Length: 282
Length: 279
Picture 1 (tube, chains in turn green, purple):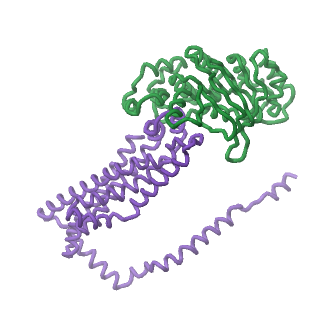
Picture 2: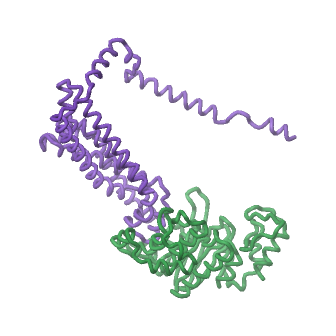
Picture 3: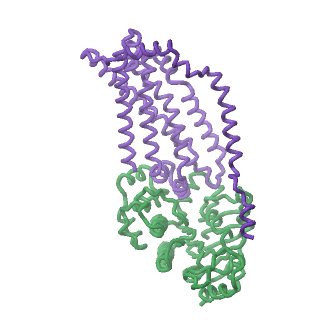
C-alpha cells in the first residue's frame, strides 16, 4: 500500500472547502493521474499526500506510516521518501542548476554534506545523469534565473527525480512546456516510476496526456472523487460532466483557429466541446 | 449611451479623501511631539547662538597634524576598528543562531501544521523576547557596567557591542529571512531537509546581499558607537575625543572626526563590494 486516504476533509483558512470526505488509495508502483477543473482540489490532494498539509478530518496513511501521529524525526524521514514536483518550482533563482538538482536529496544528506556540497557540488555525475533524461544536461552550471520558464520547470522535475522518492507527486509538472517536451517529460517521470518502483501521482490539466501516460485516472470535482477508473474506461460523457463548468476538457493541442476557447469561462459553444473531446478520445 | 456611462464614471480619485485624512492625522499626532520635545530650530539662528556656534566650530580649524598626535590617533583608530570588528563578530555569533531559531521561515512544525506547532511558536516567542532584552538596554549602559568589571579599555566595549548588536542582528536577520520568498526553503523542509540546509539552499541565495549589507551597516554603527563608549572609558577614538574635548582642543577633535568620515567611507566601499560579490 503506497497511500490510503479515508474520508479526508480540508477547509482552507479562508473558509473555502477544498476536499470533502475524500477516500483514495493506491498500491505501490501505481501510476495515477488526477484531473478536474481548476479549483477542484487537485493541489490540495497532492499536498495532503505529501504530508505537507494536515487535513482537519479523516485519516491519512502514506508509505505505511501515519504522518500526523509520527514523531518529528519519523515525519522528517517519511518526507525524505516523498518527492514533489511543484507547478512553479520553489527553487531560489540564484542557485545553479546543479545545486538545485542536488538539493533533492537534502532530506537524506547530513548537514555537513549539504554545506560541503554548496561549496563544491558533491555529485556532479548524478545531477548530469538526471538532467540528461530531460534534455537539460548542457545547463548544468547555469544559474536558474538564466533559464526559460520551461527549462526551469524541468529543473524542478529533475530535482524530484534525483531524490529517487518512493512516492512521486507531480502538480501540473508540464504546464509550461510545449507538447513535445511535455510528452517527453511525463515519459521521464513514468520511466522513473517503473525503474524504481515508485508510485506516481500527477495532477494534469491536459486530459490527453493523462490518458496516454497513466493507467488509472481519478476525476476530481468540488473536492470529491467524481470517478476513479482505468484510462480505457474514461468516456467522453464522464469528461463532459467533470468539466461541465469549464466548457469541456483541455488538451495539449493548441485550440483550433477561430475558436477563442478560454478555459474557465462558462458558456462556450458546444462545438468547441465536441472538438476537444474528439481529440481526447481518439 | 456610451457618453452617459462615461459621465457617470467617477472623475475624482476615490482615495483622495482618505489620503488627506491620513495626512491631517499625522500632523495632529506630530505637532504635540514637536512641542513636547521643545523643537524650535529658528533659535539656532539667533545672534547669540550663531556667535557661540561660530566660536566652537572655528576652534576645529585647522585639524591637528602633529606627528605625536597622529601616532596616538592611529593607535586609537586601530583600537576602535578592533573593538567594532570584534564586537560585530561576537554579535553575529549571538544573533545568527537566534535568528535561525526565531524565524518563521524555517519552522518545520508550521508545515501541516504539525502537532508540535504550539511548542514551536512558544520557542520562537521566547527567542524573540530574548532578542528584545538584549537590544533594549543601550550599549552605553552595558559599557558602563563592564568598565567597572573589566577595567578601562576596549574589552568592555567589545562585550557591550556584542550584546546589544547581537539582539539587533538577530531580530533583523529573522525578519529579512521572512520577507523574502520563503517557498524554496519550505519546499526543502517539506522534502525532509534540515533547517540549516533549507536556510543555505532556500533562503540565503536570495537574501545574502541584504544580510551582508545590514551586517556591514551594523559594523559601521559599531564604529560610531565606540565613540560614545569611549567617553565612559572603553578606549579607542572615543576616549581620545573625550580627552581632546575636555582640553578644548578643537583641532584634535576635527582630526578625529575626519578619521570617522574615512571609516564610514570604508564601510560603504566594503558594503558595495560585498553586495556585488553576492549579486
